[in-house]
Image 1 (cartoon, rainbow, N blue to C red):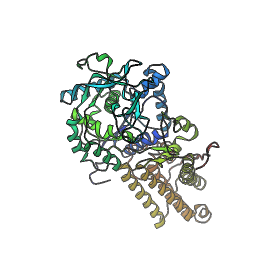
Image 2: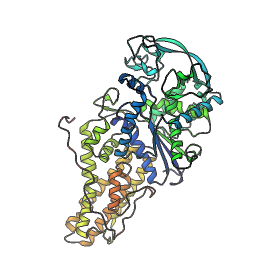
Image 3: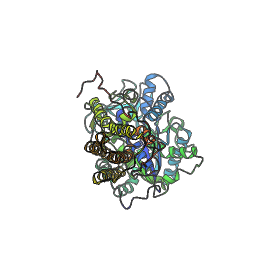
Image 4: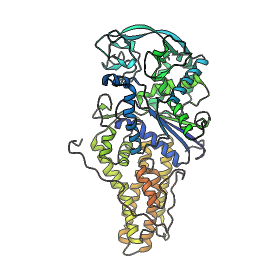
Length: 561
């Protein structure tokens, strides 16, 4: 940590995590792209003693939901109510520790969205304009952006949507598409005039550019993309659409037929971070509790997203906040690249990548978390294979860390009845291992502060490898027959090292770390203890160990790559 980093325990850390569309099951790409990194970061700060508020929720208003609802002949609400509970199950089984995971269907979210609308309007950043929107003459309805598909004018991909091309990542308007087509029929959509509210991003371009110039420590692909996007010019953008599903407009919105218009999802979804924080505060019995994370200039906010969400979180959301005034801007937007599976980007809509429920039937939650954390796409796309997941679990988590824990506690149980022995004159070999563990912990802390999560996990595993090397060199299973004092010291040192490494591993494998903490005499909750190696006092009665992690086999239907 730098000298400027606030003292542990004095910091308020907002961990804002991308809102998944509640239109289908999530997959490993989602886990690695946003939810696991956010949880690791949040757990680190909780251990460090910081006040963490981690929020997200199901995005109920995205057009992928209405598209699925139309295809199935059901209401959008029915789609959301089908998948929102499934998301909650993921978080519970994987240990993703949200303080509030809600949805954009709540009245609270609708109210907060309208408050943001009103603040921007009062400050002169919204105006009504007549615009053209695609209309499907066959089904006689206006088409939201994602109901229009066509060829991307930037890269030539033929499956670009009216809001964005997933192939090149460029944000689009439906009118940009070449050969546009309606998703609802075989008709060619035609433009028709309609009135809508626009946010005047052109007036906010300079403030956003000035703010981006002050950002430090952002990933290059995020800051470069955001700054390049702003330099290209921010265009005023519609924030309402002709829809029947979404956040209703304020009563004085000033539009004809307001009952047929809704606030558009790109504008309201990011407001969910604020509305979820306010919802959490209500559950605490202190409606103003959210302000410590949103109004205190010393508070920090980190937005965990995939790279396709960079423009909305590094440009548009800051513009909304600047226009509304008096709310904290993002401290960092650690956007991840994509996880691919044999070259194909993980995608719900295209069926690429297995669902998280399938993966949880195959792997322990900690094992899946570990394997994904070693492959986080922080700077580059990561092509993930099943044999890589299996290798990481078996060769590293089980054979290196899990085996270290099991054999040290088992030897202590056999030689000292499970009681931590008293060390006798630790020598330089003993002190060197403890110093290395402390150094690895410090290095991991610095990396975690910079959201370098893969590298921080490597520090933990390197410490486990060092502890295994120490045991192999001193061979306590042999000295137990000839030198009891040496054996006691070796096992005492190994237990201290394990206690320190457990802190480093805890954000990544929380279930196993809690169990190990209980074996070492703790209560299983490392929160607030501080990011340092705790002492396991001589005389402590240890728990009886069982394997923390189990070895997995490569599925027979999957060929090793």
